[in-house]
Length: 416
Image (cartoon, rainbow, N blue to C red):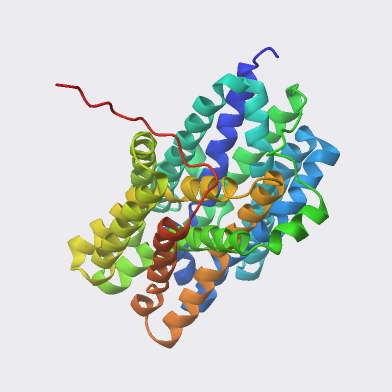
């Protein structure tokens, strides 16, 4: 099939927007908590509302893709993101924010199901490995940029000094002393832009591979009866819980325990967390060519726990750099767990993928638990849950027994 580079560019932009919307909550956490006077438990409902949508929609979205096609789902996903962002901008109350986050999260879950098979078809199967990595790099870049955009907006929106017409418009749209709401104006504009682009573009028809097909209800029943499937589901649950547990709470932690400004230092730390995750992903690609993936998982999860220890128990500087550095070592965990899981079953790979993506709800449940424990004891004590999640991921490196191991380069010894 002829490659369609315009469609590839659209998908890469979609990766950017998904990440831009998804990974901003950590930078927003202190601002939202102050604006609404939230307890830690109530603050935990923010990521809960967003990521629980993945748990609900990941499997149904696969069936919707097969029934309605890629264009309808792309438009539907961006429409949900646009409506969720717009409604919250117009009615910026806490309850509306929770509902909007769920609506936006539902849209993101739908988009995640569509973009990879569409990228495979549009860019050519022979280029899929390259374009997938490129998509992940752009995903990471957006996660790095969005907290920096937040910092710029909260420092300039609503200020009295002379500013650009765009900042003045944002000032009129958001409540006084809630300049962070302007991020959702940006989200609405980005989503509207992509609705227009997708609507105007002809997309290639997708023939889903066996691994991409949603599967049947019977295949899900059979898989859920297998202990291995449940263990890998818990692996994804633990990973997203740990990733969001650090990225969502670090800015708040640095404010509470070290008095660091959440609008600048805290947001910058969140940006660097995601930036280092992108860099770590590049190194991970190299390491997986020379080392068994289970060994890489053990090494990186162990180092992530050391960084988390520095973040939780170190002084101001050590805490700041420990939290950020943990992103570097978290980088390889998701793809390794997914590949080990898929390589541990001999059939129903599409259904298995749907079950694994449902595990993203860990980003919802773990944050709610951290918030609840933080109100009972302390935020530091609550974040110890992240250790449990990383410990479980560390254990996968020992008990995983895939049917197919990752291919590595073997170095030949020179004979004397």
